Image (cartoon, rainbow, N blue to C red; front, side, top):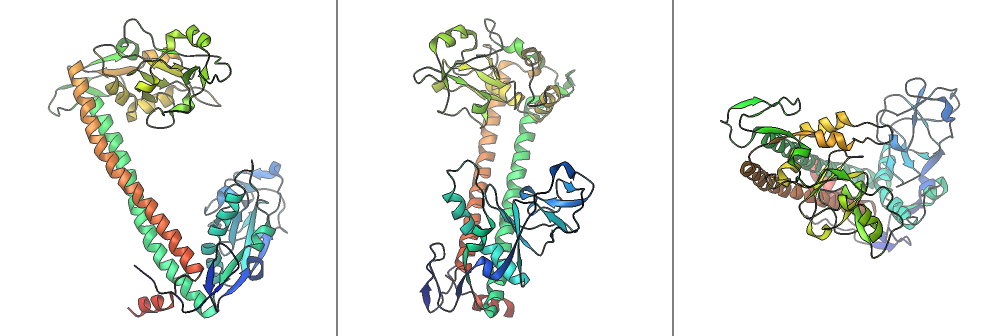
Length: 438
């Protein structure tokens, strides 16, 4: 849908604003809002339950604060949902306090007090773009800080009072429509994720034949399995000449032409990446020949995301591991993809979570992994289940990818619409009147 433009424009002198309607005012934030800084409250007096809620950056757009200030704060400025809040560290977020009771303001958050709700809402819509530009300019710094002076110096385009209502009303109406579409797509993505997990869990524990007689597996997370299936320890499914083992303990400095090794940090995605691996020396690699992986093996995390399995692709044939990962080489009568699906099923993930120990990060021992019991159908059935799951999950991934792409496009559309309206690139006065008349 195309929107009308104003008849006359002028140069704003501000890069992000560009040309604005000739009768609009280009002004600074501090000229239309009072900026109130937060206070450096003593963290020794923070309490999860007692005192007044304390709004920190993480609490923007939240109805509850993670901590409360239990000290005397009678003279401190308190905010409500009426004030617009700016987080001045990190990504410089714009938000509000959504709680029912007034809250105190942390030193890394400032509040903007305006004359009216409409002008506050205009700032809420207009400020994310210039704040992002400031954020991008400070990207190279280790920790990004924003001052209230910088907030106050941001220049915005301000329409006359009689147009201000129209701009805000138009954007509230149109962004609500877009937000509803985004929410619907996000619900679809969540449902597809649940469907994916349910399909995997059912296939690896119940098989593909709904009429197959069942038996108790003897394993709590598995429940009943087809009567002709076996249940085996993972170590019993490995190649006889191999063992499930972790890798290099001290990999030494990164060697440009060395041997790549796989860490748990390399396992964040659904597949092992093409590049980005640290490399160890041939001498250290040779000392850990037992943990070298081959194409088709599974690398299983025994730290952090415990039990997560990823298949070794051809480009990592001959790579090694660190002590946070383990190698599983499937026996000739074991399908690696079936085992992989078993380990990412809901029941297996819950069991790994139960087994994991540790305060800083969870981990399991090699012995726990070796004794981890999984279903073991006949080899031909393992392959059928794995191939069926491949096909079903490919379809689900296609639907999920389409929904994620739709969310991206909708959010881009939302941002573009807001930018056009708050900088006067479109004249929304007639659009609002038409909608109200209809």
